[in-house]
Amino acid sequence: MQRQILFRCPRTGMNVQQRIDDERPEGRTPVDSYVPVRCPACMSLHFVNTTTGRLLNEPNGQSGSTPRSA
Image (cartoon, rainbow, N blue to C red; front, side, top):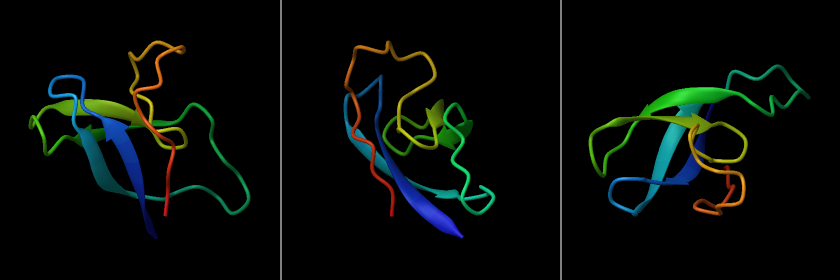
């Protein structure tokens, strides 16, 4: 099953929507699980949290992305 995540590209500042495979066991949500995502805005590889949409190197206080999933 796939779902969508939304994150902000650190190079362009654009909001990016990307589909990822949802490999979570039923009923379990990994809080600190990051996946590599090829960014269509800058064509670079970013590591994105599958739950929150935050980037791996993004400071905790910065709200650069909105956690959304479908």
